[in-house]
Image (cartoon, rainbow, N blue to C red; front, side):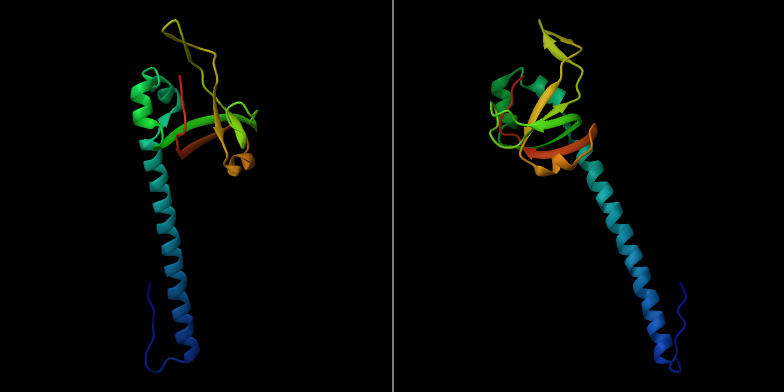
Length: 144
């Protein structure tokens, strides 16, 4: 960008140039913030695991509890639906159905089973389902 000012420029000309510079900086900082946000999301996706992987980890419950319970984890999943929790596992919050196409029976992974997760995050209510999400949260409990 070229900005022309001299000692003979009027106050209005100087203000116009400064307004253009301010606008250019705003565009730059917005673009940079957007790129940083995309990079953060990409990093989250890269470090995330799926609920299927987490379920497999709980095949060894002692190791999985040490590794995951109480720790902040990032989980990538496709949520199919959400409804209020039934009170068996979580008195407050919501139960969401994760689109998943495998479960273990007789030591084999077989198609057809859905995984269920629980949350007290109100933001889940505002989503349109089905929805792909990356969730960063502290795992409070888990099992196969």
